[in-house]
Length: 500
Image (tube, rainbow, N blue to C red; front, side, top):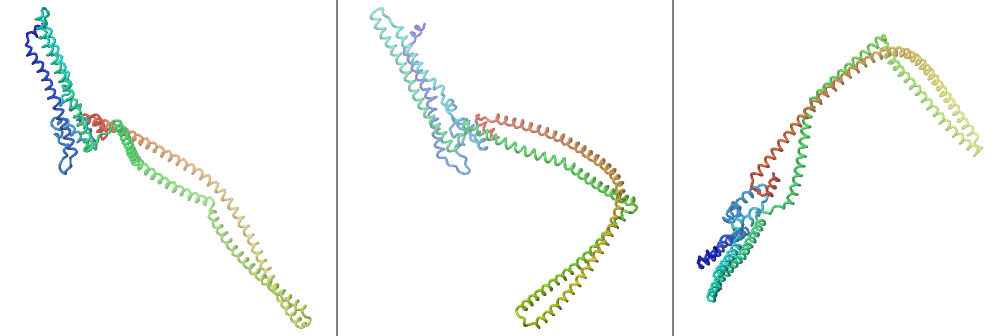
């Protein structure tokens, strides 16, 4: 059937169809793949030169912020890059242009990379198809029944073989030329794209951190943020708790202070009344002997003062006597010195007897005067000693009487004091009972106050926990909405979360 079909077709028409298909596939490959790739190369190189020659002027936006900076073929991805880069630049972050302008995104869509991959195979397939058509054409006309028919069929078979090899050569040649041209143009475009990215990173926007480094920085920043948040929360919680405790305990402390001061003042007044009553009852029970004892002690004090004055006078007399005795000793020493000088003079010369008698009479006169003066001093000392002994005896007898009276009064006072002590013991017991009830009331009130404070603190902490949970859920919802609202690559989303 196929032999009949190909036999009916004109060889010229078949040749035209096959060669036309090879030419059309070759031209379509160049138009759809090679020329767009060369245009992309030109656009990338033009953009690189524009970045290198860019000068920032006040009031004018940079040239790379124009949506048509890379031409119409890359207007959509570049515009999307500008929108996202503007948002991140406001937060101090950078965006990688390779995520929007790359060989996977631009080349595949604009340069029809899938078509470029199909064209060489299509050209080879058309060449192989022409080869099989030529072989079938040559083999179908083969006739070996006679020499003439054989020669005719051989010439026909040679024509078919020529077509077969011609189409194969045309298909393979077109495939090779397209492959070489496509690879060369694709390499130039890739090199121009890399140069554009390098210039853009150096002159406009730095390349973002790698994933590992970014994760480390993010974890460190997160840890610092958590520590700071924990410190702030602890400080706020501590200040809030201290303020709450101060507000809760200030009135209680003031009430306790006022109560203690009132009780203390009352106890002091009561104790003062008890002491006054005790003294009054003691004086009444002793029939005024307590006051008489006070007067007696006052008289004893006055008598002791008089006795002290008498003793001082006796000591003054004794001191004057000692001074007289010192003067007598000094006079005796002078007499002895004069007698020594007299003996020396007597030994030196025996001729001065008259002078000796005169000197001897003078010495004897001096001795008589000194003895008389010494006798007077001794008599005065004896009189002073007798006076002192008499005064001491009077003081001893008077002190004995006073002590005897004081002993008697002390016995009566001790008896009365015993009775008063019993009364004070009963009063002390009553005071102890009152103090115990006072302490019990204070303890009960303080326990109630602490219970109310603990209940308020538990309610406050529960409310604080609920507010924290609500805040955490609100933050999570806000992060989720922000993440879903931005059309960003994963690395950019991570940086946005970090900045948030």
